[in-house]
Length: 609
Image 1 (cartoon, one colour):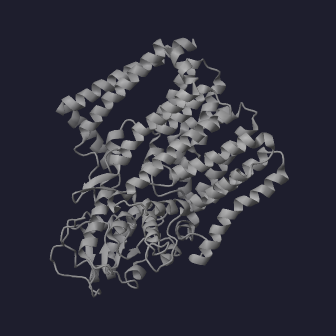
Image 2: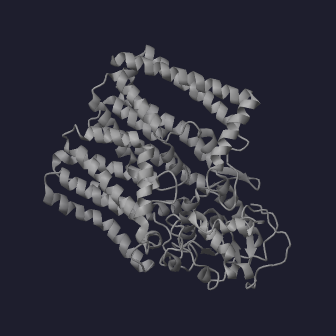
Image 3: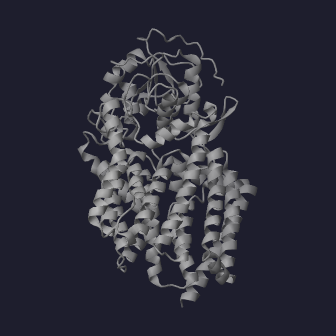
């Protein structure tokens, strides 16, 4: 009966592959089909709440790429279905060869992820192909560049505010800035580094699977889930510190599990647990959970406690440095995101439920397997995941899509899920099929790989351009205020005023101004940022012309800061009448209180490298 059901599902997979190929061919060759698909995509796009700047979707004009992707995906599905139908035993023997599986996994990862680094985060900007990261990692890049140039570990030279939350990753970025690489290629160096770290994490993931004595198809399924996961790919190629966190977390778990027979973790294991706490400041929670994991798994409790004291050296030293250098116990971003926000658990719950919805089958499979296991290590892994989830809820979740805060533990969820499926005692072919079903239910990079990962985000491109416009047309001492604190400030190289407070101690410690906005975007004070700091230029989060009716719609929600800026009396009197004549995606305004701005309507000079 099981074999009969497997044959039916494999034939369905074969039909899906054929249909995918036919649809792709129709999109490429039949304009009417392409227009119909584009109309459906535009309808989906229009359901999203628009930003004040109303950017078009990044895939506009590139729909043929989706057709070619569908054709390739269809061919792959047909080949996979035929292999499982006719050569199932040979596929099983291939999966049983660990070396072949690992080499193939690394090869597939490079083939799929490297193009995203080369094209998905670059564009020809003013006659040079320029690479960039997501806007948030580019805040860390500005700190890194200032550190490498001798200005200190600061966002603005002379202002000591810890507006980053990833100290070790920022240090590694600073190391990249010592290389003889022009600024328009520096982000590519970071992206390649992140890809190499991800490959290392993949290898360590396989070692952990071996240490846990997982079956061969479980190993293959977990590695494939890691490679094809859309959230991991996005955050890695946006330049976040997630791959480094995963690498150190998996390395630590690997050693803890393998050293269980010795009764206590080694000093290198303790060192790694300490390092994890400084990759990202809030990763001390993961370090503490790893310590608890080791304490409960190992028999020599006193030895574990004594050796784990060495794990405190690195985060302890960093804490002393923070107090000495910045004068704070916590990074500024911690005060910004959790300070004076008592209702943060509500968006935190929404964030957690959103993650569970996207990975529902994995969560169910993991819980199913947990109910049939007696292995202590499985229960400890589940406890680690649950306690970390509670912490994420407590902090209020994240402002970004792709579940950044859950990604460090996502490989562990994959492991628990596939180990749960193996409790079903299916045939090897049925196990492979169950793995495929699990994979297609998570956020995978197909379909949409070409449209949403190989095509860069317009906002990032335009922020790079905006920064270059400012650099080419303003004096080096000009103060610029903006809510986007990454790409535009990195490339403008001008003193900045962070309107949303990541690098501003005053904004970070004030109460929440918009309860509907996400964490990190809900605090602003224009009486302070404009009235006291007096920027020479203000970059608005809208582009003229706009109507008051339109901006009133943005007085609440995630874009509340944009609407509040437009209607603020200081902005309306001193900045709004003086828009700069430049071809930028968001309007730049000169402020009449400045002694260095040119408030005439002369056009700015187009930048060049």
